[in-house]
Image: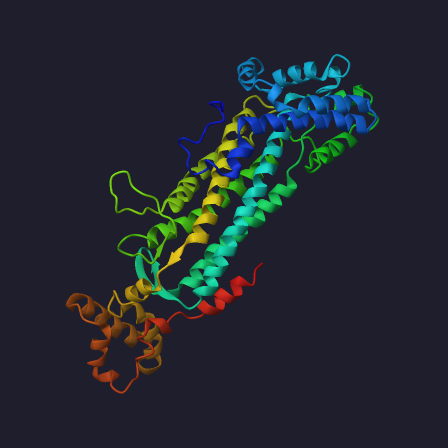
Length: 444
């Protein structure tokens, strides 16, 4: 049975069943803690500070995480404030009397906990990057297919000027690529942590290391993490970078979700999710569930990131409470972002576009959507001020009387003989949208 701390996802459908669910559970954290401990013994052995047999024995003992009781570890963690202390004791016993003393030698609990957090993040961010790749490929296809599909641009909730769905999809993709690049860069930079009790590596020197500064790099190499420049017990750049990366990713995907939620409203219906969700009360509903879950993650992520940023204020050489405060928010943020990336990929791959609704909506304002391009056409003829005054008056009249702007334009004596058909056509008013879409799609 999954522990209560790990969660089953009952109240978190956004990340339930995602790769992040598997890489951030209690079992996954236990696996990371054990990997960190075993790698430390192997690093000792690589530098001649422990027998090779000890590295083999500890690695073998740590390989089976099922032999360690999660519930017991959680209960005993209260005594020292973290789960590393009881785990190190259990792993010492599991490694046997001869080699058990090599477990955790020279390290402090925060070394192992921080390193395990980096391992969990590393293992989670890989699938996140993969899902972001899926999303951007799907959005690129939409941008190409709908490069010239015209729809109303909306600013401050109102129709503004025409745009294209291709440009909108290209914009979503640009944000996804920004997120992908940040995730990849942060993942590649995640460091191991090794400093000993106060970040001086003193214990490793005491145990015979001629050059203790070599040990963190060897340790990091054993784990596939970056070598730390310094012990970072109270220098929390890696956690802060993770916080920013994850919050940005959730927010970038939230922009996609917010637009889809708006455009899929019943009265708009310019897009729809490929597989909408049902309602417990209304059989006719097909709810935009993927967008809803992504939007929920985007709303929660900033507050979690704020907690992690708050932990930057860490006193002394090792703090009381600051690094402890990071564990749950970081796990939640990894889960939320991982789930959002999975859902965004499914959303983009299944999104249905309805160009006929977009065309229909171009006429909702009875030609008013074309006033900017009409103004540009009339300015050389009437002057800028006169053109604006005329169009402002006619736009007001069109709204009040419920008539088309083009009909009113045709009655204006000073406009007789001026061909306004193209300027009044919303499909002619998308400016450089096509070229901008092409330009955006050049980004790999």
